Amino acid sequence: MLLRSATPEDYAPRIAELIWSEDPVLIGLEFQSFEGWAEVLAAEWPTSGASNSHDATTLAIQNGDVCGLINAFPASELEARMMQSETLRGPSALSSELADHIDALFFDPDPSDFYILDLAIHVTAQKTGLGVILVNHAEARAKAIGFVFRAGRPY
Image (cartoon, rainbow, N blue to C red; front, side, top):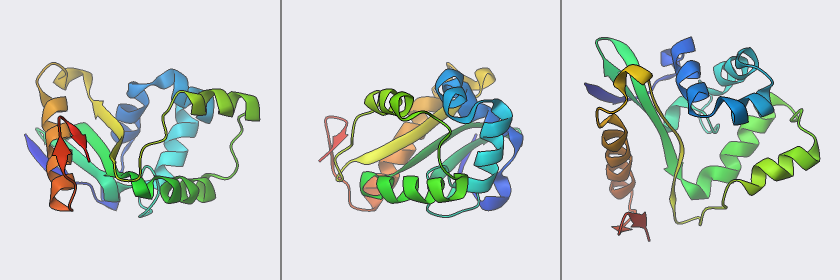
């Protein structure tokens, strides 16, 4: 198993499928279909600073194929990344009422947190410990840029 930073050239339908598999209902509400999601991700992936960009993503590669990924970055970047993504996507097709309900599902992270946006493991690699490996890798990246962890939470 190889863990490595993603590059703009890594984008492929497999990555869209992995992230879609995390929560197809919620992603489907926002993007209407897998095809809509894949189109948006294809635009965001090569754009540094977007929420679903390669620049915050680590890939797990096994037998030459992506079998997992984690997208994580300082929470202080979250708002700017979301704004960059909105610029690429255009305005949301969601009603403001539905958008408010979806927003209520997520907490507002403290700017001092290290934020995990996506953690996705292909079904063939689930129950192998890959999720823990990717989270530990993200934690090591966070520590390398100055985050301090206590009891599993950065402070």
